[in-house]
Image (cartoon, rainbow, N blue to C red):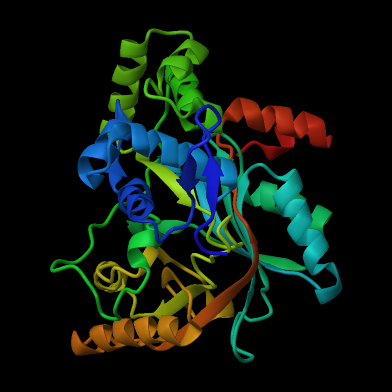
Amino acid sequence: MSGATTSHPSEGAAIPLDLEDPANTAILAVSEDKLEGFQRDPFDEIAIRSGVPLETVIERIRALLEAGTIRRVRQTLLSTNLADGALVAWQVPPENLHAAFDFMFQHDPFSGHVVVRTTDSDTPGSKYRLWTTLKVPQGFSIEKHCEFLKSQSGAEAYRLMPAKALFVLGVGHTRRRGMEPDSRSDEPADVMYPRVVELSEREWRVLTALKREFAPEEIVRDLWQARAAEAGISLDEFCQIAESLARRKLLGRFSTFLEHVKETASGERVTRYNALFHWAVPAGREVEAGREVGRHHILTHCYWREAGPEFNNVNVMGVAHGTDKSRVLEHKAAIDAHLASLGIPVAYTNVFWGGRSEIKPSEISPLAYEAWCEAMGVDVEGCVA
């Protein structure tokens, strides 16, 4: 169903919802992952960079959010610097797989991406079908949290893979559509090492208001005014604290997240294939390899994670999306060839394909963790690190 439109509530004017509309394409190419840090006036910045009038930017983002083509609009956090986190692979009996998926998604606000993954053949790690991201607030134990989830979900085993370094962290599905294999930057990707930073109560209040996703009716010019009131401070102080958080590398970007798993309102699929790439490189060369892998523009995420013997000691991971499976594999082959050309040996490599998937922002507030423990009947003292 191409050419889908919606009507403006007051004027009855048709607003194009399809992603091929030139204004929508221009807006999303900026708004998905180009607004780094904190922006006092993000919609104006999108208008400047996209060349689309400000009024149209606000109108289109609101309409696309109402239609579900954009699934959320929010300020992202670099939560690796705010809470202990990890990618978790879960071994779950087949008969319990979807019940475990539902439990992680519906009942654990600290689990973010929840994905059922498969491999094309029986490979090391392929028995780990359920994958989640997990953030546990400061002061609590990620291992104890996983043990509770294991007892409640029917999982038999799990593998925790915290990020030791980050090379790519973004989205940008619009600008990656049709991207050629081996498209890469001139320089290796930057490296960032996670470090948990303590915040004051006032900073947590700002952060909590800052990160909550926006409802369609909140897509207005003075975006942060209501959030400052929610935090109980002036708009100027709110922005100053937000800018301080950004300088400390605690904020990611202001972003409009496309619905890239399900069909959009216009009947399109932004992506059909979600691939988690694995590489095992020699110890001591993880950062070098990660920075080279991270140069490739197709990747939305790239990390150094130690997967352990269950996964043939994989230590570099990247995530790519595409509408064609063979095309995704061409991108993977280009990255493999690039590593080989640099003399970086890869002892093992694999692709895990994403199937059923749900994504939600992970909760990272210590107060939220205490409230969750009470609601779940969990002894909060037993979860302390």
